Image 1 (cartoon, helix red, strand yellow):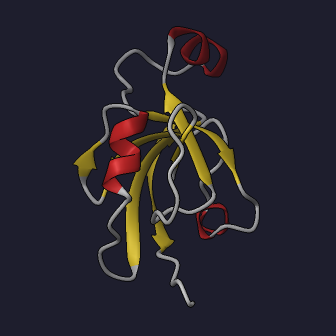
Image 2 (cartoon, rainbow, N blue to C red; image 1 turned 90 degrees about the horizontal axis):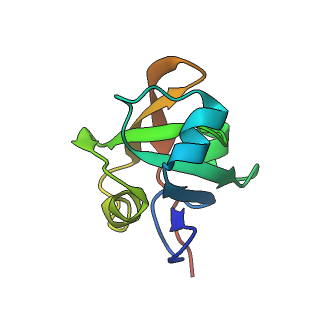
Length: 108
């Protein structure tokens, strides 16, 4: 996962870019005040995250059942993959749901 202000590489949800959820995004996407997390600003259509259902405009609420406060928190929580999948709780289009994203395997 990448933060718009601070890019990182080799993260669990490769191909996802996030930013902090600010007032303008909240209004534009009609995100309720009680929804807190990291805003998905871009998803690579060839990534496992896209294949699992994460889309631009989603708000990541939890990663592996750990609450997400902001973009930096989302980036740091995906830096060290655990297991074969990452469980992501998202708010999108008025609904909250879980998405299981396969962890990518690096081959060098």
